[in-house]
Image (tube, rainbow, N blue to C red):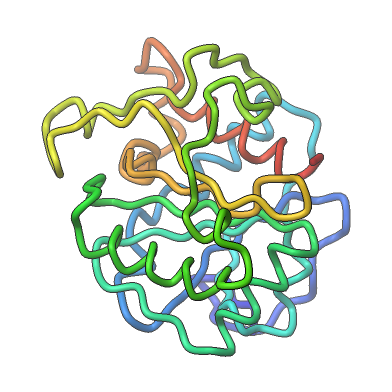
Length: 224
């Protein structure tokens, strides 16, 4: 079932041209962390691009019959990631039909619970494809880093990892599971969720808009 956080009611599907910020709900962890990310990212898509947007965040499960209506999914948390077989099958089908899941580890910790268990799940989801299951590093010259704004050094750093939370590492890469010649799962240990979790009206106080990289992900998901 598709839900909006405010109404928790079924809604009609979005127009085919609209970008929808769809968040994955999974029963094992804190899937609803960073609640302001959607509004902030949607504002950036409106501000910088001509892509029409659906104004509300949508919450959806990986076993939903409506999953394929969305080219982009956002998944985050600190805790255990455990999917059932229907959810694994749904995600694999989503990946193989052109969707992109952006999974962001709020712990930004390669040895943390979210990281370990999410990676275990990807090995199950892509058991037929050892390379995708391993989610190798995404090259820093990948098309995603120039899909709208140009990030010649790869993924931008976050203030959270620079402040030493998590594993005290600055991750100079993202990882990906590719299917049908494109990124199907984009995986981050950089905690972009916390980085983008502020009211979009506060952007005017920032020297650089740190949500510009989110625009790249959205454009890649909508056009690749």
